[in-house]
Length: 316
Image (cartoon, rainbow, N blue to C red; front, top):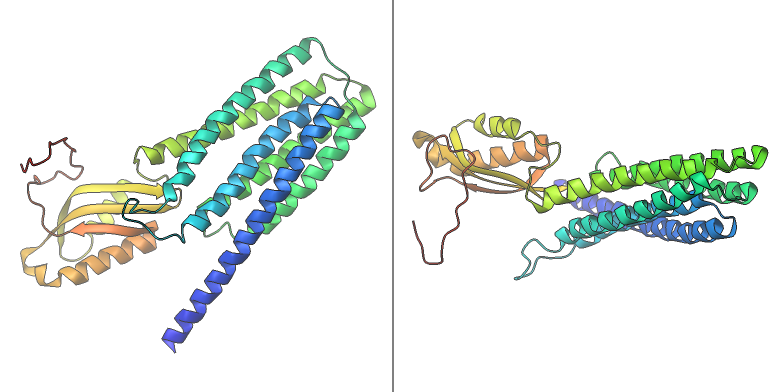
């Protein structure tokens, strides 16, 4: 019965993943289509705010695509040349595109600066219609993703992107209404600057998180001291050395450590390692571990061991 239940659960999980991947692809397509509509609408109606929101939509489309890509590459097996698979591609693409978005924001600020001192006529009604369509699309995509946000940080990030763009659409709608009823065209560049600031803030967050992963930093939300304390709390563990935690991609964490086991408990080594792995998975979402029972050359208390560069063939 247990084996049947496990197979049934696995099948259900694959079904959920397949549905989520379809929703992410459809959401990416919808966002890209609306991005093109916003660019065309911004040009036709002379709305810089629509152009700026199109740039923000570019970030959303990227976030949705990367969420789908993360699910896709997670199913790809490792190879002899890439033993971790292609998970890091997601992080690398995030970093490169955050740089691109920074340049887009600079162009928005430059154009907004000119319009603040020399406002240009904007079609408020047309801008309102395009922004309202965008608001509906963003809310639909956000509702599609909401049920998956609790167990997946990657999907939660994409969901927050869509909520942020929905808020930006509301800003464009407000500017369009002001322009339509008052003719105060300064509302367009002012909203554009606000959206540009949102873009910069979002791009900075992506760049910061991506570079942290690429530099093998401790995963965001992981308390190194708490993880160490949980390992040491396992019966039979005296201490630990050469302790490392890093991210393979945004939501896949790995850990390696040398575990000092009490001499009288070494016959229980497999049991102790199983207990450690269970704690790491349940409490810290760490599923990929490399644990070594003996530590040759480690000094007592050297939990964070300094890495040294050594030539090939150098054994000490």
